[in-house]
Image (cartoon, rainbow, N blue to C red; front, side, top):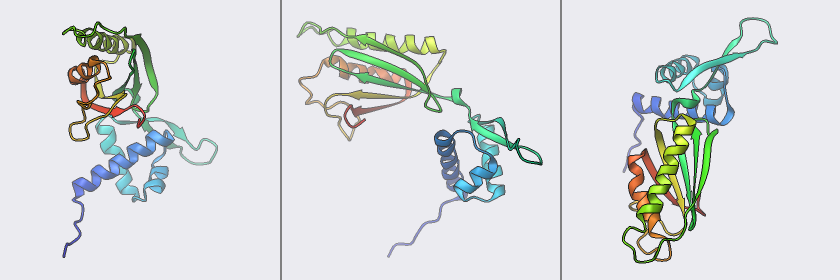
Length: 200
């Protein structure tokens, strides 16, 4: 017989913080009352939650709500959009596209690089296109004024090994530079996720 485990206060806070961040990402700025109604948390719990997220630099007061009614206006809390950035790399057979977005999901920069086929059998064939794709990512980040990427997601044709999260070894028909790009990308991002393009 198994017994149910209750969440520790720390775990509960982390779950509530994540729910609040997802609500702010989906709905935009919300008041404390709106967060209370959407999460079902008590008013003091929401106040603690908002304080934690502000201390972490994830949430800030972005305006006021209720100017049409009597009494004090309620503060609107929104995500600090430039607190973190993510990159998406769409890797095709003959091109690589890079897009960078802020914490709210708003795209801030995008560019595409055509990648010509390298001569088959050359040992350095995968290196040049992969290096060019990484250089494109660096250029896009520089243009957007982004210093670092929290997470990079790569969408590529072919199978992805579910155990390792890398492109499968049986992708014989795919360019070798795809695997090389995935291998080198962790030096550019805190976290790298690889997925089949159709699944994405």
